[in-house]
Length: 207
Image 1 (tube, one colour):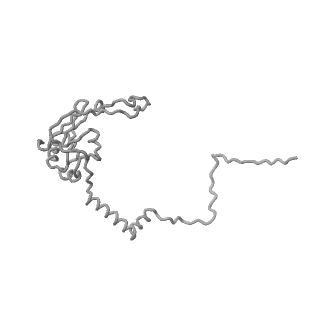
Image 2 (cartoon, one colour):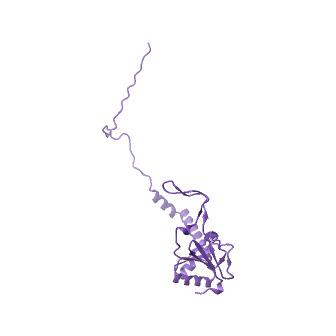
Image 3 (tube, one colour):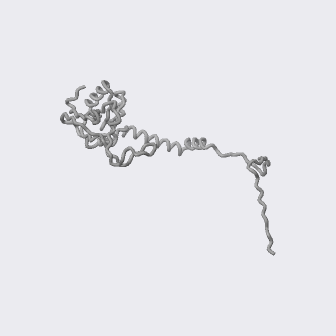
């Protein structure tokens, strides 16, 4: 006859009372140092001071030599004659657009004109920030009506400090490429569902 082994499993209910069984063995207080205290001590050590000195030297070099003067936008030339034309800002969608309910309201390949759904509240003036006459002309326009001044070259920080105003820089030519701009100074404003772009030679700028 085979022997039968029976195992009994006693399960403690989840609601069983939790008891304190005391402390067994030797315990020791936590002696780990505070991470902030450790980092501070290291930064005050010789190696930390040397690292801080190198970081400060690098920061000073950037401010002194580069002075956050972005690279001028390429393929932008001075305006030689007055020229005004309309630009269609419509784009062709590269993918379907869906609303929050998953309904497709624009399909891939559809043409979308942002100006059919919005109105620009200001003019955009693109100038060469290294040309004093262009800067003064743009500032005069800004003082008369809502105007966003966009630089394609020059030192934006110095100009903002000098004229106490906000200026923008067309980083890597993102805006000039989008609107096919090739000459400055020029003004861009909304005209219906189109953009009116007017190029004006520097010698004809009127405040």
